[in-house]
Length: 453
Image 1 (spheres, rainbow, N blue to C red):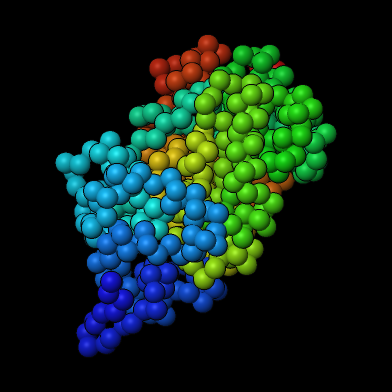
Image 2 (cartoon, rainbow, N blue to C red):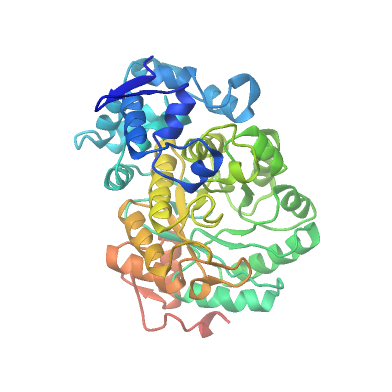
C-alpha cells in the first residue's frame, strides 16, 4: 500500500490510511480544529492522488477506529456482505468512482456492490467526487422504506413537519401543524423537538399528536425527539407513536456521550415493532451531522466526513425509516460557511444513499455561521435534483424553539413545484381528499387550515 506521492517536485508522505482520508477531505473547519486536515491545497491534492490508488481491501483492513476498540467499527465490518466484497476487494477507489458514475451502470447494480462496502470506502469515494459528481451519483440511487407511508420512491419528495414550541404548548404546536398540513407538509414524519426531556411530557406530546392524526385520518408518522430511553419509558406507559428517534454518531465513544449503544437501539426497535402504531418494518428515525464526534471529543483523530459515513453504517443495521443529516446545525466550528455546508450536504446525502439508507437533509444554518437563506435554498435545490428523500418543514423557516434557520413550508412546496415532485403517495391521496392538492399541485386552499381545525 502506497502512502506517499510526488507532485511538482515536492514529496508528500502520509502516516497511515486515516491520515490520507483526513487530508483528502475538502476543506472543513472541523478538520482544521481537530488538526487533521490538509495544510495546503497541494497536500489535499496529493492525498486524493494517494487515496485514488488505494484498494478497497486496504480500506477494509484499516478502519479509522480499530475493530477491537469500537462497537461502530464492529457493526460496520460484521454487516459487510463477504461474497460481494471478495468480488471487488481489488478495485481501487478510483475504479469505484468511475463505476458509480458510469452512465451504463444502474442504480440497482450500485446498490448491490454497496453491500460489500465499509463506511471508509463510502467516504473515500465521496472525497474523489466533485459536487456535480455527488449529485449525479446520488440521483441514480433510490432507497425506499415503509412505516405508515412509503418513502424514497421515484418522483416523490417528502417532508418532516416540525411544529416546535418554546414552552411545549400543545395548542401552539397544533396551530403550526395545521398550517403545515395545508401546504402538503408532514408526509415523512410529524416530529416535535421537546423543551423538556421526560417521559410524562413526551407522552403528553405524543398522545396529542397521535390523537390529532387519528381524528383526521392523516397517513403520517408521529414522533417526539426526546432521548431514546425517555421515549421507551413513555411507550411502556402507553404513549402512542409511529417512529422512535435518536441522534447517533460514528464512534463508540461519541455514542456513549449520547447515552446510547447498539444494544439500546436494537431494544428500541424491538419495542416499536411490538407496540408502535404503524406496520413498519422500518420504525427508527436517526439524526446525524458532520462534527458531532469532535464536539464530544470522541473523533479518535479521524476526519468528519469519514465519521459521518460511519454514522450511516451504524444506522443501516437497524433498518431505519428515515435518517437526517442536520447539516448546518452544529455551527461554524465544524462547517464554517455556505460553501462548506453545501459540500457537506451533498456528501452526506450521497454517502447515506450509497450505504443503503433512506436519506434526508435538514438544509439549515445557525445565525453565527457565514451563510444565509439564499445559501440554504441553493442547497435545497441541489439536493432535490440529487433525489433527496425529504427535508424539514418549519413555520417561516425559523425554528422558535431550537433557534436556527431552516426550510419553510413554502420552500418545500416550491421545491416540489419547480422539480415536478409530489408528496408520498398515501399522503397525496389524503391531501386531495381535503382539497389541498389536485393533480400533484397545491390548490387555492393551501394555507387555509379551517377544514382541519
